[in-house]
Image (tube, rainbow, N blue to C red; front, side, top):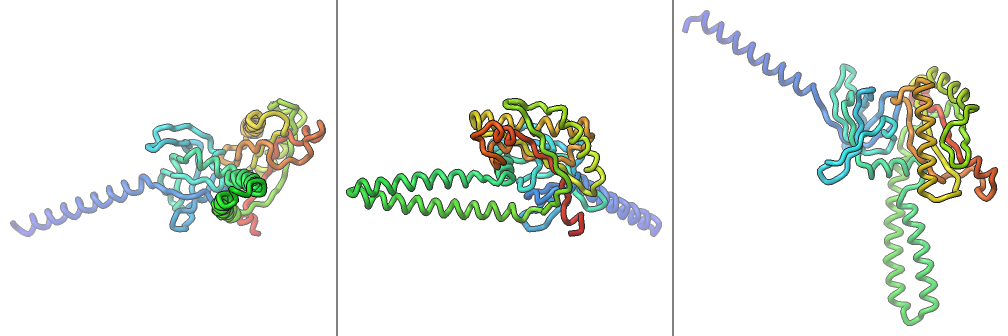
Length: 308
């Protein structure tokens, strides 16, 4: 083979290797996956802390598909809104990195049970806390039985010891959950509006709409703002009904802010129904019940953005 042919073969081989390397690089840049805990939201960007402790900025867009999955093979799926992506939620993100090394999310998946836990953290009522209260009541009953039934004292003492161990384990779990909540990004409250509702009603009274529109306009002047929406109910009626009412009230206010206030869903942080938690007035009067049937809307700005 003469020198010209050798040179031609070498140039062709180098070009093919470069093409393969370029193709592999493009393929690797097309998609990426991330698993972790949502650590905070700043506008359309959410911060996700992975298992190795690193925090990755994830950009949400109107095309980001959010799904709740259940089952061992995650075969059951439910399409959700961007407002479901609350701090403390464990998520799996698929997307691609942009020039700013941000992961632009094509899809975000999470378990329904993880969403419930994150919402309970936001409400300040973790499921372990309710379980702890039930066990504490059971322990009191068992102590009364010990006094009344001396012959069964040893057996009941053993049961008490087992219950105490379970309570201690639940306390540790609650402490760990609260620690995770306390480590979430801190926010400044820029402005706030409270919308009251009639008994059993979920529609917005027209007199509150100008206040909501003013809040929406003010939010647009705040750098990196998010709007938090929390719905509440009075304790009158069943727990299931109150949960439903607080959900629909929060959803209606969120829809109004999006449709009439022109606030993108990427800037709305809605933990959903708060039920009868955090009552602001006694429910034994009609006036107190009226104060508790409410939706609280706040403009939040991450303290890191504010420079504090």
